[in-house]
Length: 354
Image 1 (tube, rainbow, N blue to C red):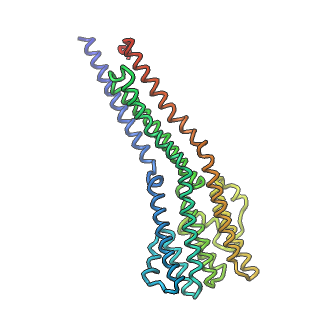
Image 2: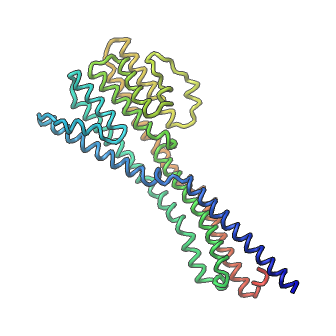
């Protein structure tokens, strides 16, 4: 009776420890899933693509009306304010300033439409180049469950310990999910040249600020006043970047601060602001319009950004091997080794040792 009671106590203790281990394991997975920003990876790109498509369509409609010699209705002008940020404010304020000063609206509309089209094409090209990484992440996520089911049907002895095999498959599956999530994060980061999620709106924001600067100068505003308004526009999107650009057109830049920025894409955003400010300074000093210099700086920024994204995407297949070897491959090999151990124990009568 004493031996039976001792065995019963050992079984209860084992089941209790197993139960709390399962609870802690589930809670850890829940905390991990809470840290995963599924919206930024799967939903946000589609929403932005849809917003860019609507922006291009609305600007194209107004451009065609003006090109045909017709005046857009008030509904067309008011519809510009409802565009997805930052397009609504950029287009509405730029067009309103041009209309108030009697400036030409059509050139600015074409530039804004080209900017939206270029940004949309850049995103589509980046997504197509990172499709291989996304496919590898998907395969890594489903490979462990499929492999576990196959081993369950092939190896003898595993069916005699289904809960033990299920728990080992769950551990391997969580490991493969971590690797898949890591791969998704790497692909998402490569599409934005390594920028963090909170910094990514600045890519479009700095170009919109440059286009707003051009529209204000073309409307007849002094270049230094146009710079202040453009910085107010950028400050609503990225206050930190607005400070680095400098609200005063005569502010001096610190090269040591630029060298301290480790991210090449972030450094590119700051350099664009300094190039635009130098263009405005030169325009104020010599008394000539700075539009050509500003257009050149914006064009150069777009080319440098494209080259930076292409470089990140070119090395992505190599970088993505790290999560494969750290999380996915050990999970599959460990599952195979444990399955063979269970099969060996069952065929040799070694289950009593388990």
